[in-house]
Length: 142
Image 1 (tube, one colour):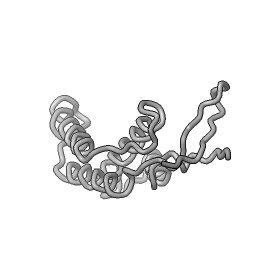
Image 2 (cartoon, helix red, strand yellow):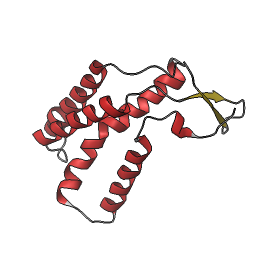
Image 3 (spheres, rainbow, N blue to C red):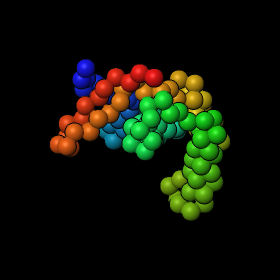
Image 4 (cartoon, rainbow, N blue to C red):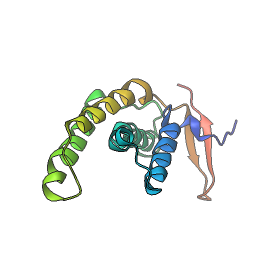
C-alpha cells in the first residue's frame, strides 16, 4: 500500500509549527511588530522545530528505524546548547544579540512541548526511489 503523505513521518504538530514560524517571519518582514510575539515566539518554537527535524532525520535517514525517539537528555542538551549560545556567548560577541532570561524559559517550555507531544515514533517508513524527487511513504508497523 503506497501512500505519499508526509504527515506519517513528521512528528505531531511539526507542520503547524513550521507554518506559524513562516507566518511570524512574514509579519516581521512587513514591519509589523507585536511585542511579546516578536520577542518570544521564535524561541518558544525553536526547540520543537529543530528537534522535530532532527527526529525525522534520525528515524528515516540515519538509523532507518521509525520507532527511534530522543531521550530526555537529548532535549536537555539542546535547550542548554541554545541557551548558552544565544543568551551567553552571542550577546557578548555580537551587537544585535541581547541576553534575556525569558528566552531560556521559552527554550525550556519548547523542550517540554517537544518531549511530551512530538517525540513519537514515526507512522510511516520512507522509501527513496531511484528518481530523487519522488519519495514513497509506506505505513510502519512494529
